[in-house]
Image (spheres, rainbow, N blue to C red):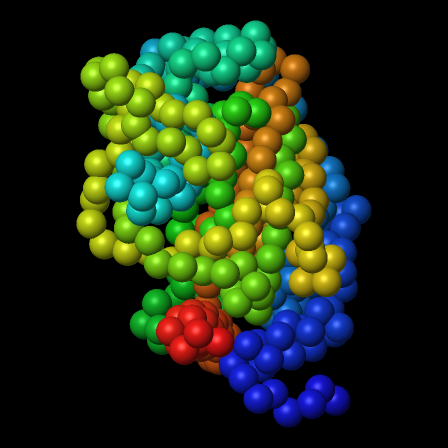
Length: 363
Protein backbone atom coordinates (compact mmCIF):
# COMPACT_ATOMS: atom_id res chain seq x y z
CA UNK A 1 0.00 0.00 0.00
CA UNK A 2 1.32 3.43 -0.93
CA UNK A 3 2.22 5.76 1.96
CA UNK A 4 -0.19 8.53 2.81
CA UNK A 5 0.56 11.40 0.38
CA UNK A 6 1.48 14.76 1.87
CA UNK A 7 1.02 16.84 -1.31
CA UNK A 8 -1.28 16.90 -4.33
CA UNK A 9 1.67 15.91 -6.52
CA UNK A 10 2.29 12.79 -4.42
CA UNK A 11 -1.40 11.88 -4.52
CA UNK A 12 -1.44 12.18 -8.31
CA UNK A 13 1.76 10.13 -8.59
CA UNK A 14 0.17 7.41 -6.42
CA UNK A 15 -2.91 7.43 -8.64
CA UNK A 16 -0.85 6.93 -11.79
CA UNK A 17 1.38 4.33 -10.17
CA UNK A 18 -1.60 2.29 -8.98
CA UNK A 19 -3.26 2.50 -12.37
CA UNK A 20 -0.14 1.37 -14.22
CA UNK A 21 0.45 -1.52 -11.82
CA UNK A 22 -3.08 -2.83 -12.43
CA UNK A 23 -3.20 -2.45 -16.22
CA UNK A 24 -1.18 -3.89 -19.13
CA UNK A 25 1.90 -1.99 -20.26
CA UNK A 26 1.11 -2.77 -23.93
CA UNK A 27 -1.97 -2.37 -26.06
CA UNK A 28 -4.19 -5.42 -26.55
CA UNK A 29 -3.90 -6.95 -30.03
CA UNK A 30 -6.84 -8.99 -31.35
CA UNK A 31 -6.85 -11.20 -34.44
CA UNK A 32 -10.60 -10.97 -34.98
CA UNK A 33 -13.31 -8.47 -34.17
CA UNK A 34 -14.62 -8.69 -30.59
CA UNK A 35 -18.16 -9.71 -29.84
CA UNK A 36 -20.42 -6.88 -28.67
CA UNK A 37 -20.09 -8.18 -25.10
CA UNK A 38 -16.28 -8.28 -25.36
CA UNK A 39 -16.26 -4.77 -26.77
CA UNK A 40 -18.51 -3.56 -23.96
CA UNK A 41 -15.95 -4.97 -21.50
CA UNK A 42 -13.16 -2.89 -23.10
CA UNK A 43 -15.39 0.21 -22.92
CA UNK A 44 -16.14 -0.41 -19.24
CA UNK A 45 -12.38 -0.70 -18.56
CA UNK A 46 -11.63 2.32 -20.78
CA UNK A 47 -8.79 0.37 -22.45
CA UNK A 48 -7.74 0.47 -26.13
CA UNK A 49 -7.21 -2.42 -28.53
CA UNK A 50 -6.28 -3.09 -32.16
CA UNK A 51 -7.93 -5.68 -34.41
CA UNK A 52 -5.30 -6.72 -36.96
CA UNK A 53 -7.02 -7.05 -40.34
CA UNK A 54 -10.41 -6.37 -38.76
CA UNK A 55 -11.50 -4.25 -41.74
CA UNK A 56 -9.63 -6.16 -44.46
CA UNK A 57 -12.90 -7.20 -46.12
CA UNK A 58 -14.41 -3.71 -46.15
CA UNK A 59 -14.90 -2.50 -49.75
CA UNK A 60 -13.02 0.71 -48.89
CA UNK A 61 -9.90 -1.24 -47.95
CA UNK A 62 -10.13 -3.38 -51.08
CA UNK A 63 -11.03 -0.64 -53.59
CA UNK A 64 -9.83 2.81 -52.54
CA UNK A 65 -6.83 3.39 -54.74
CA UNK A 66 -6.17 6.79 -56.30
CA UNK A 67 -8.04 6.03 -59.54
CA UNK A 68 -11.11 4.83 -57.66
CA UNK A 69 -11.22 7.91 -55.44
CA UNK A 70 -10.80 10.30 -58.38
CA UNK A 71 -13.52 8.59 -60.38
CA UNK A 72 -15.93 8.62 -57.42
CA UNK A 73 -15.26 12.19 -56.25
CA UNK A 74 -14.05 14.01 -59.39
CA UNK A 75 -14.41 17.77 -59.15
CA UNK A 76 -16.60 17.67 -56.04
CA UNK A 77 -15.53 20.41 -53.63
CA UNK A 78 -14.29 19.50 -50.16
CA UNK A 79 -13.03 21.32 -47.06
CA UNK A 80 -9.24 21.43 -46.84
CA UNK A 81 -7.09 22.38 -43.84
CA UNK A 82 -3.91 24.25 -44.79
CA UNK A 83 -0.87 24.97 -42.60
CA UNK A 84 2.70 26.08 -43.35
CA UNK A 85 4.27 23.00 -41.73
CA UNK A 86 1.58 20.31 -41.39
CA UNK A 87 0.96 21.03 -37.70
CA UNK A 88 -2.77 21.76 -37.55
CA UNK A 89 -4.26 22.34 -34.07
CA UNK A 90 -0.80 22.66 -32.55
CA UNK A 91 0.67 25.04 -29.96
CA UNK A 92 2.71 27.76 -31.64
CA UNK A 93 4.86 30.42 -29.96
CA UNK A 94 3.70 33.69 -31.49
CA UNK A 95 5.74 36.91 -31.99
CA UNK A 96 4.39 38.32 -28.71
CA UNK A 97 6.04 35.39 -26.93
CA UNK A 98 2.75 33.76 -25.95
CA UNK A 99 1.81 30.17 -26.86
CA UNK A 100 -1.45 29.64 -28.71
CA UNK A 101 -3.32 26.63 -29.99
CA UNK A 102 -3.42 27.48 -33.69
CA UNK A 103 -6.01 25.98 -35.99
CA UNK A 104 -5.46 25.62 -39.75
CA UNK A 105 -6.58 27.90 -42.51
CA UNK A 106 -9.77 26.38 -43.89
CA UNK A 107 -10.44 26.56 -47.60
CA UNK A 108 -12.43 24.81 -50.32
CA UNK A 109 -10.89 22.90 -53.22
CA UNK A 110 -11.97 20.34 -55.77
CA UNK A 111 -11.15 16.81 -54.72
CA UNK A 112 -9.13 16.14 -57.88
CA UNK A 113 -7.02 19.27 -57.38
CA UNK A 114 -6.50 18.49 -53.70
CA UNK A 115 -5.33 14.94 -54.41
CA UNK A 116 -2.96 16.20 -57.10
CA UNK A 117 -1.37 18.65 -54.66
CA UNK A 118 -1.26 16.07 -51.86
CA UNK A 119 0.29 13.20 -53.79
CA UNK A 120 2.72 15.38 -55.76
CA UNK A 121 4.13 16.89 -52.58
CA UNK A 122 4.26 13.49 -50.87
CA UNK A 123 5.89 11.52 -53.68
CA UNK A 124 8.52 14.12 -54.54
CA UNK A 125 9.70 14.15 -50.94
CA UNK A 126 10.03 17.93 -51.04
CA UNK A 127 7.83 19.67 -48.43
CA UNK A 128 7.77 22.92 -50.40
CA UNK A 129 4.67 25.06 -50.07
CA UNK A 130 1.87 24.69 -47.53
CA UNK A 131 0.73 21.29 -46.28
CA UNK A 132 -2.87 20.25 -47.00
CA UNK A 133 -5.02 17.82 -45.05
CA UNK A 134 -8.69 16.83 -45.50
CA UNK A 135 -9.62 16.59 -41.83
CA UNK A 136 -12.96 18.33 -41.34
CA UNK A 137 -14.43 16.65 -38.26
CA UNK A 138 -18.06 17.32 -39.12
CA UNK A 139 -19.46 13.94 -40.18
CA UNK A 140 -17.88 14.52 -43.58
CA UNK A 141 -18.04 10.97 -44.98
CA UNK A 142 -21.83 10.83 -45.53
CA UNK A 143 -21.93 14.50 -46.59
CA UNK A 144 -18.93 15.98 -48.43
CA UNK A 145 -17.61 12.50 -49.35
CA UNK A 146 -21.00 10.84 -49.86
CA UNK A 147 -19.96 9.01 -53.09
CA UNK A 148 -17.51 7.02 -50.94
CA UNK A 149 -19.90 6.31 -48.07
CA UNK A 150 -21.34 3.01 -49.45
CA UNK A 151 -17.87 1.44 -49.20
CA UNK A 152 -18.05 1.42 -45.40
CA UNK A 153 -20.63 0.28 -42.84
CA UNK A 154 -22.99 2.86 -41.40
CA UNK A 155 -21.81 1.78 -37.96
CA UNK A 156 -19.11 -0.66 -36.83
CA UNK A 157 -21.11 -3.84 -36.01
CA UNK A 158 -19.50 -4.71 -32.67
CA UNK A 159 -19.70 -1.08 -31.50
CA UNK A 160 -23.28 -0.62 -32.68
CA UNK A 161 -24.39 -3.51 -30.49
CA UNK A 162 -21.75 -3.21 -27.76
CA UNK A 163 -22.65 0.37 -26.83
CA UNK A 164 -26.10 -0.79 -25.78
CA UNK A 165 -27.96 1.82 -23.79
CA UNK A 166 -29.78 0.16 -20.88
CA UNK A 167 -32.42 2.88 -20.69
CA UNK A 168 -34.57 4.01 -23.61
CA UNK A 169 -37.55 6.38 -23.70
CA UNK A 170 -40.63 4.14 -23.40
CA UNK A 171 -42.38 5.87 -26.29
CA UNK A 172 -39.52 5.17 -28.69
CA UNK A 173 -38.74 1.69 -30.01
CA UNK A 174 -36.27 2.48 -32.81
CA UNK A 175 -33.14 0.34 -32.81
CA UNK A 176 -31.02 3.50 -32.79
CA UNK A 177 -32.38 4.35 -29.34
CA UNK A 178 -30.80 1.25 -27.78
CA UNK A 179 -27.96 0.71 -30.26
CA UNK A 180 -26.58 4.21 -30.92
CA UNK A 181 -25.37 5.20 -34.35
CA UNK A 182 -22.13 7.21 -34.54
CA UNK A 183 -22.36 10.90 -33.78
CA UNK A 184 -19.98 11.44 -36.73
CA UNK A 185 -18.13 9.41 -39.36
CA UNK A 186 -15.06 11.29 -40.63
CA UNK A 187 -12.60 10.64 -43.44
CA UNK A 188 -8.98 11.77 -43.06
CA UNK A 189 -6.83 12.26 -46.17
CA UNK A 190 -3.28 13.48 -45.76
CA UNK A 191 0.39 12.60 -46.09
CA UNK A 192 3.47 11.97 -43.96
CA UNK A 193 3.90 15.75 -43.66
CA UNK A 194 0.89 16.12 -41.32
CA UNK A 195 0.81 15.29 -37.62
CA UNK A 196 -1.87 15.65 -34.96
CA UNK A 197 -0.75 17.08 -31.62
CA UNK A 198 -1.52 15.35 -28.33
CA UNK A 199 -5.15 15.92 -27.33
CA UNK A 200 -8.23 14.05 -26.11
CA UNK A 201 -11.86 13.78 -27.26
CA UNK A 202 -15.12 13.01 -25.43
CA UNK A 203 -15.95 10.15 -27.81
CA UNK A 204 -15.61 6.39 -28.03
CA UNK A 205 -13.53 6.30 -31.21
CA UNK A 206 -13.39 3.40 -33.69
CA UNK A 207 -10.62 4.06 -36.20
CA UNK A 208 -10.26 2.22 -39.54
CA UNK A 209 -6.98 2.46 -41.46
CA UNK A 210 -7.49 2.26 -45.24
CA UNK A 211 -4.28 3.45 -46.97
CA UNK A 212 -0.82 4.02 -45.55
CA UNK A 213 -0.21 3.65 -41.84
CA UNK A 214 -0.58 5.72 -38.69
CA UNK A 215 1.29 5.62 -35.41
CA UNK A 216 -0.61 6.52 -32.25
CA UNK A 217 0.90 7.56 -28.94
CA UNK A 218 -1.76 6.88 -26.30
CA UNK A 219 -1.98 8.15 -22.72
CA UNK A 220 -4.79 7.39 -20.28
CA UNK A 221 -6.76 10.28 -18.78
CA UNK A 222 -5.39 9.12 -15.42
CA UNK A 223 -2.05 10.63 -16.54
CA UNK A 224 -3.43 14.17 -16.92
CA UNK A 225 -0.90 15.51 -14.41
CA UNK A 226 2.00 13.84 -16.23
CA UNK A 227 1.17 15.33 -19.67
CA UNK A 228 1.24 18.74 -17.99
CA UNK A 229 -1.83 20.55 -19.28
CA UNK A 230 -1.75 24.34 -19.45
CA UNK A 231 -4.31 26.88 -20.60
CA UNK A 232 -3.38 28.77 -23.75
CA UNK A 233 -5.09 31.22 -26.07
CA UNK A 234 -6.59 30.26 -29.41
CA UNK A 235 -5.51 31.38 -32.87
CA UNK A 236 -5.76 30.54 -36.55
CA UNK A 237 -3.34 30.53 -39.48
CA UNK A 238 -4.06 33.08 -42.23
CA UNK A 239 -2.11 33.98 -45.35
CA UNK A 240 0.06 37.09 -45.13
CA UNK A 241 1.59 38.46 -48.32
CA UNK A 242 4.03 40.73 -46.46
CA UNK A 243 7.70 39.63 -46.64
CA UNK A 244 8.13 39.27 -42.87
CA UNK A 245 8.53 35.90 -41.21
CA UNK A 246 5.88 35.35 -38.55
CA UNK A 247 5.67 33.49 -36.28
CA UNK A 248 8.35 30.94 -35.43
CA UNK A 249 7.19 27.39 -34.89
CA UNK A 250 8.15 26.42 -31.38
CA UNK A 251 11.15 24.12 -31.38
CA UNK A 252 11.56 23.96 -35.15
CA UNK A 253 13.79 27.00 -35.58
CA UNK A 254 12.25 28.26 -38.79
CA UNK A 255 9.48 30.66 -39.60
CA UNK A 256 6.37 30.56 -41.71
CA UNK A 257 6.95 32.97 -44.58
CA UNK A 258 3.70 34.27 -45.99
CA UNK A 259 1.71 33.25 -42.90
CA UNK A 260 0.66 34.83 -39.65
CA UNK A 261 -1.53 33.88 -36.68
CA UNK A 262 -4.66 35.83 -35.78
CA UNK A 263 -5.98 35.62 -32.24
CA UNK A 264 -9.45 34.09 -31.90
CA UNK A 265 -10.12 34.65 -28.21
CA UNK A 266 -10.78 32.23 -25.39
CA UNK A 267 -8.48 29.65 -23.82
CA UNK A 268 -8.22 25.87 -24.02
CA UNK A 269 -6.25 23.28 -22.01
CA UNK A 270 -3.44 21.61 -23.98
CA UNK A 271 -0.71 19.16 -22.90
CA UNK A 272 2.87 20.38 -22.57
CA UNK A 273 4.34 16.94 -23.23
CA UNK A 274 5.25 16.36 -26.88
CA UNK A 275 5.92 12.68 -27.72
CA UNK A 276 7.95 13.70 -30.76
CA UNK A 277 10.48 15.55 -28.62
CA UNK A 278 10.52 13.79 -25.26
CA UNK A 279 10.17 10.03 -24.81
CA UNK A 280 11.85 9.85 -21.41
CA UNK A 281 9.73 8.13 -18.76
CA UNK A 282 7.14 6.76 -21.19
CA UNK A 283 7.30 3.17 -19.95
CA UNK A 284 7.04 4.24 -16.31
CA UNK A 285 4.06 6.46 -17.03
CA UNK A 286 2.08 3.87 -19.01
CA UNK A 287 2.41 5.46 -22.45
CA UNK A 288 1.32 3.11 -25.27
CA UNK A 289 2.59 3.29 -28.85
CA UNK A 290 0.95 1.37 -31.68
CA UNK A 291 1.04 1.48 -35.49
CA UNK A 292 -2.10 0.62 -37.45
CA UNK A 293 -1.69 -0.83 -40.94
CA UNK A 294 -4.11 -1.00 -43.87
CA UNK A 295 -7.19 -2.96 -42.80
CA UNK A 296 -6.60 -2.59 -39.05
CA UNK A 297 -9.18 -1.28 -36.58
CA UNK A 298 -8.20 0.69 -33.47
CA UNK A 299 -10.50 1.30 -30.51
CA UNK A 300 -9.49 4.56 -28.83
CA UNK A 301 -11.41 5.00 -25.56
CA UNK A 302 -13.05 8.25 -24.57
CA UNK A 303 -10.77 10.89 -23.03
CA UNK A 304 -7.50 9.11 -23.85
CA UNK A 305 -4.81 11.53 -24.98
CA UNK A 306 -3.48 10.67 -28.42
CA UNK A 307 -0.81 11.97 -30.76
CA UNK A 308 -0.91 10.79 -34.39
CA UNK A 309 1.76 10.66 -37.08
CA UNK A 310 1.32 9.01 -40.46
CA UNK A 311 3.08 7.50 -43.45
CA UNK A 312 1.78 7.73 -46.99
CA UNK A 313 0.97 4.60 -48.97
CA UNK A 314 2.48 3.67 -52.32
CA UNK A 315 0.35 6.24 -54.17
CA UNK A 316 1.38 9.15 -51.97
CA UNK A 317 -1.51 9.51 -49.52
CA UNK A 318 -2.72 8.23 -46.16
CA UNK A 319 -6.43 7.56 -45.69
CA UNK A 320 -8.41 6.69 -42.58
CA UNK A 321 -12.02 6.78 -41.42
CA UNK A 322 -13.12 7.09 -37.81
CA UNK A 323 -16.45 6.58 -36.09
CA UNK A 324 -17.21 8.83 -33.13
CA UNK A 325 -19.77 7.48 -30.66
CA UNK A 326 -20.90 9.69 -27.80
CA UNK A 327 -19.31 8.67 -24.51
CA UNK A 328 -21.46 7.91 -21.50
CA UNK A 329 -21.52 11.01 -19.30
CA UNK A 330 -23.62 9.36 -16.58
CA UNK A 331 -22.01 7.39 -13.79
CA UNK A 332 -18.70 8.31 -12.14
CA UNK A 333 -16.19 8.07 -15.03
CA UNK A 334 -16.53 11.50 -16.68
CA UNK A 335 -16.83 13.29 -13.33
CA UNK A 336 -13.75 11.53 -11.97
CA UNK A 337 -11.73 12.42 -15.08
CA UNK A 338 -12.70 16.06 -14.64
CA UNK A 339 -11.77 15.85 -10.96
CA UNK A 340 -8.30 14.50 -11.83
CA UNK A 341 -7.87 17.33 -14.34
CA UNK A 342 -8.88 19.91 -11.72
CA UNK A 343 -6.55 18.45 -9.07
CA UNK A 344 -3.68 18.34 -11.57
CA UNK A 345 -4.28 22.02 -12.29
CA UNK A 346 -4.28 22.86 -8.59
CA UNK A 347 -1.06 20.90 -8.09
CA UNK A 348 0.59 22.71 -11.00
CA UNK A 349 -0.42 26.14 -9.71
CA UNK A 350 0.65 25.23 -6.18
CA UNK A 351 4.03 24.08 -7.41
CA UNK A 352 4.53 27.29 -9.38
CA UNK A 353 3.45 29.46 -6.45
CA UNK A 354 5.81 27.58 -4.15
CA UNK A 355 8.72 28.15 -6.51
CA UNK A 356 7.92 31.84 -6.75
CA UNK A 357 7.70 32.12 -2.98
CA UNK A 358 11.06 30.38 -2.48
CA UNK A 359 12.65 32.67 -5.05
CA UNK A 360 11.19 35.70 -3.29
CA UNK A 361 12.65 34.56 0.05
CA UNK A 362 16.05 33.93 -1.51
CA UNK A 363 15.90 30.23 -0.55
